Length: 118
Image (cartoon, rainbow, N blue to C red):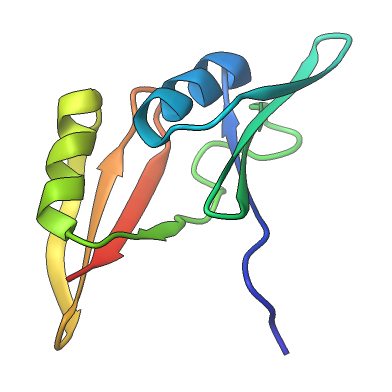
């Protein structure tokens, strides 16, 4: 019924700044779609569009976005890389099932992001 995730959209006070920061961590080119004061910025990582839309209470009140988990080869190394880049530890690591662990961080812009891997 469901296919693969194609786009992950989060909301940020400064979409371009958020996208540029994530491009520095994950690699990739930032693209912008500006319509007046509305900005949508995105980059593509592993075939998934990682987008940042202007935050506002009408479209998505704070805390209303889902937490997306990115697959990683080494959870501890990825966690450390994100912390070094400026994220703050939020939750985990937790062992969900044998060989599957998850962890959450908060990026410098308040977005909770999950990582999943061994």
